[in-house]
Length: 256
Image 1 (tube, helix red, strand yellow):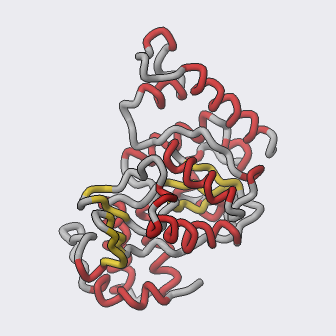
Image 2: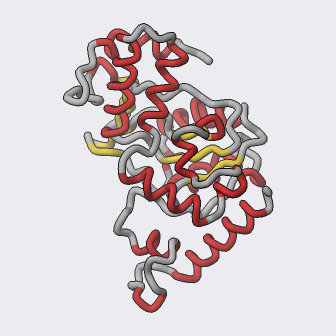
């Protein structure tokens, strides 16, 4: 594991005053292209032995704050860099309400059964050795100061394209036998592009999981069976959601 970036920003992390710190501090800025800015947060630890890789779009400001705060705490405790990075990443991975919703989605498609767990919640605790929680864009990206939501074609921006290839893409190549599950449609588009670029094996990528951060999304509610087809608005394509759910359940069951 390469610690060059961590070493570059270590002094900024040691001085970070979470939870009142600013993940968008100039001392943490990595790149800028117009309104898009990339900031450093300690997310580069990778669990290379993981069986499943959950892929979000990018760490948001709240997650970056959690990671920076945990890393600062671990540094004060005198822990070695690999453990600092591991603790920071696991603390921030799909943190908050999104994690609870994600667990429901993963259990709904039977991921816990394949892994021999009581619930996918264990992936964020005692069974964390089975999980790599990462992002299409490894480091926090902001668009005009706001959390970056991906856009329709992030691969068209040269800076974003480089971020996908240099970090997530290279990591994916080191884990050819893991199962990759993109979370949300925007992430799926980016992962699909990287698959075409040769960074992932198509047969090891399972698309179709809704984004857990949209707690009130009827798309997610219908996927989980919490909302009836008859009650859906015109904005949700029930047939498409049904197809995604059925595909994911079959794909995961085939792993057993």
